[in-house]
Length: 93
Image 1 (cartoon, one colour):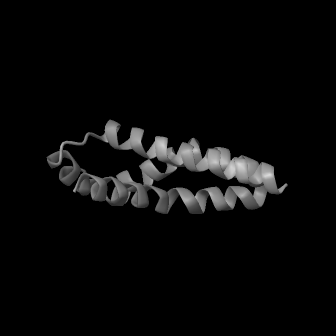
Image 2 (image 1 turned 60 degrees about the vertical axis):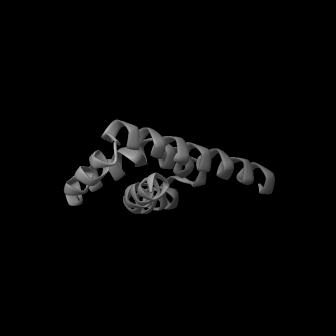
């Protein structure tokens, strides 16, 4: 149950993060996009989630998650994905 909740929050935050990072990739390049995906994009996703899906935090709170816990997990997952993408970029460059 907890993994399902974390994965839903991860997908919801990244629904705002990925388009922002892709737009940034078209303007500044792939390396900056990877950096934005794991840092500033999470803030963008959080603001979007806070604006459009704020009431869903009650469900996460009932499962025992705080906003800080959720954001830490999303940051850890996005950083892991970014490191993997950066390594793939270095290999195929």
